[in-house]
Each structure stands twice: as C-alpha cells, then as structure tokens.
Image (cartoon, rainbow, N blue to C red; front, side, top):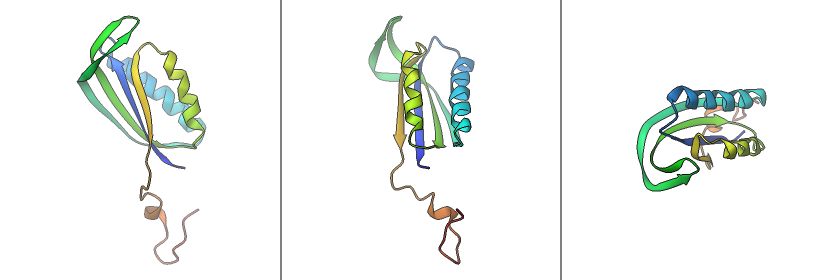
Length: 115
C-alpha cells in the first residue's frame, strides 16, 4: 500500500470539531478498507495566497489539516465525494514516491520482507 498525504483547507466559518469529524469519517472509510493512518497534523489558521470564491463569498484565510496514511490506490476515488462539502475550500491527495517505508520493515538477516 502506498503512503499518501491528505491535505484539507476548510473555511474559517467552520469550527475545528466539524473539521475533526470530517477527518474521522475519512479515517473510518480508510479503516474499513484495511488502511492505516500514520499521522494527523493541524496547521491552524493560514492566510491564503489568493482568494477562493465559493457560494458563501470570498475566502482570504482558512484552516488547514493534514492526514498521512497508507491505503490501496482505489481509495482516492472515494474522496471525490468531498467536492460536494461546502465546509471545504480545497483538498488534495499527494502520493509519496520513492519513500523508504518498505525498507524499514524488511528482515535484517534474510533481506525478505515481513509479508
């Protein structure tokens, strides 16, 4: 399973609990497909480099959170439902390329993986 970073930029009008609930929902979907969450970070309030226009107006700042996880490549199709969520200004899924996580779980003597 590849390693991914899921970054969410939410509106400042949304409270932090609502954003946390969104990440919990994504985590539950991920867990149902045998994925593993490795890290969750909150970057708090950030000024945007440009305004983002949504139905409720223009946004010049937002709240950013990041979740790092391992999942099957088909999982990114499930995230497309986030496009309909009005709380989210932008979201992005980034796949880690060339990460060394696989080498860290190899057996030291035989050179074979644990799987």
